[in-house]
Length: 260
Ligand SMILES: C[S@@+](CC[C@H](N)C(=O)[O-])C[C@H]1O[C@@H](n2cnc3c(N)ncnc32)[C@H](O)[C@@H]1O
View 1: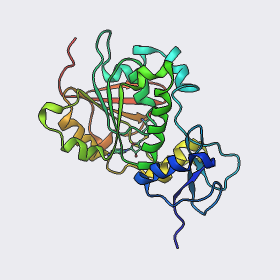
View 2: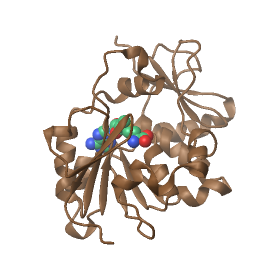
View 3: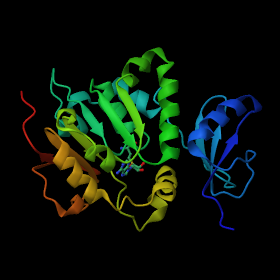
């Protein structure tokens, strides 16, 4: 029999009921913590939901944390509207476009934009990643400092291409943002733990050119694509503008102006 990719475990006995509820959406095999032969373990502890590499010592878990750590620091001390992501989306003083984040992942970019005042609809098609993100949003809602930020972030688990194709004209998002999985890097030791786990779960996002076409058809004002510096344009489509930082490039496809 094939080894399952992900199994679900309870970190403590008191979370069993919450785990049953979670598994009504995920339908994963249930194992004891550290048990089973799946490659990855999604573990609900009394503190949070986290993804672990099963049976690999010394690998920290992956989880979403908007309250403390790097994202909290960025919320308090980040470069605000001057940062390349905010410029690419088109934020200006008094102008916070509504953004559809078509590739939500762990919600970092969305959180940065919500911190700056944008309202976001986020789509994530991997049910496991969406569950990690939903858990992070719930914990942030319970914290006074972050609750008002994450109230601007709405998550749907599903495919963004289907979602966009189901929208009618009146529902067009002002800006569509996408950050598909990066092309595979040869030096795998350089790829962060998190990205390795992501790659096992979601693969390479081979349909990102199709997503870009759908996004360009449905965005009211612009589509922004995040790429590694030096990477090819998605679908070989030339953007109207590129905004660069040392490691990252934002390709901006313009349908109409955002106004002043
Ligand atoms: C590189 S990650 C995004 C990281 C995210 N920007 C962040 O800040 O955490 C790409 C994610 O997009 C998701 N994805 C790719 N194509 C998608 C689609 N068509 N619809 C929904 N999710 C998609 C993948 O499942 C993956 O979780």
